[in-house]
Image (tube, one colour):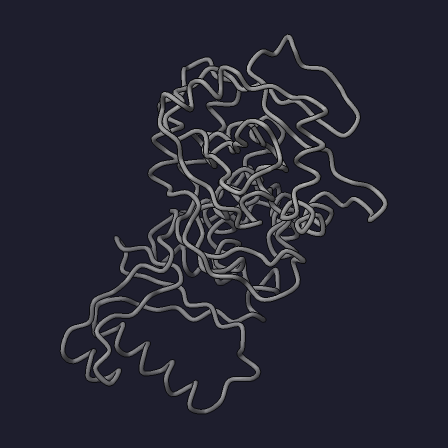
Length: 339
């Protein structure tokens, strides 16, 4: 059963995956083993070989090095170090929706499995800090995936995981589960249905706690629909709803990010003005943020302060947070090598 980096690139490979019944999952978790033979079979799978560019980009390995195959084991006493394979012990959990079957044959005599995203995040929590775990969870709960070479345009896809499912899984863990508390905290801070890495970055920069480099603002909803009344529909030529990048429903305030500020045509500007007017008629204040605002540290902090004022939330300029904020900005506004 694949886990850790192996699970992540299995998700990215778009291999056909099927959730299995709890009875079968219980058996798989109980009998999970990690052998060199299994690792060789994984490395020989054609779709696995196609993902090695992504695996190296995520891990920083050179072309001359092949990432280890990570496999789950049921009994921690059987963990052994072998060349090219890593074993990861699975703690006692409720097996419901914790294991997916890989439908494309691996060339093994037995079936091949991968941990589901909920269990994947619990295992990764052993190595990640809170921002890293939230960023990874947000990517799994998003509607995009990065191309295998991390450079091409985004690929749209249904979310691999829902935030309610993640929160239910985390809450259902036994109290003494290793890193269970960290996963529960991360689940509370994870945004849902991001459509781009920038939306993920903005949500986390604004909402992560101060001690982790964020501004500590309330977690926004990403891309929620706003139904328009007749007047607002007329402004937009009959369009019945709009979607807002980041929305705080209780305050009726939203942020719209525009990455094309220097290349927008006059028609684009007029369309944005009409969209803002329609949102205003619908009772939502849209605050436009441009790429130059977000990428400038001071301008972004000032914009976040104004947003906090609109939300009625506290804001801190305490200099003790500067280095953490800069570190988080570098992490989230650079390439999203989260896994």
